[in-house]
Image 1: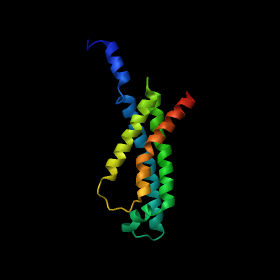
Image 2: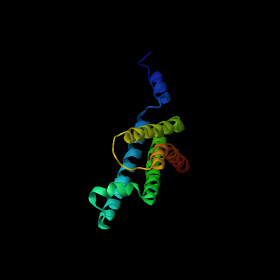
Image 3: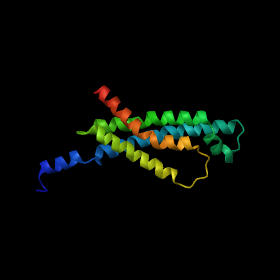
Image 4: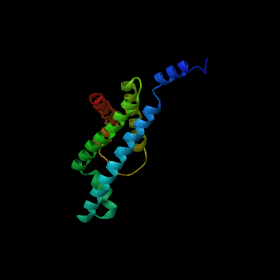
Length: 148
């Protein structure tokens, strides 16, 4: 019967789009956004202080390979918090839910890259942005397993 708690619990246990997935996604996305926003803001002001024209700072930032590598490493570390919390909040199937949350994050990155901005983002950086969330979420899950 639809009102039975056993059936509802089974459906929730088998559902990959669940509260742990959504919360883990929000935590990973929020942590990476906050950290990358702050570091990007600092880097852009450093460029302005070095004499780069304000209308050119974004282009110069995306042309800086060391900054992009730093941003991807920072993004990986902060995104891993989402994998940690997805696994920690999952009563069952932490690997499957963590993978789904990482895939969800990658889908959002693809959607973001489809926005028509005219920024010279290198192809390798765009590819890294799409691929990093999945291993980052898995690393977060492994961090949770190690601590548990």
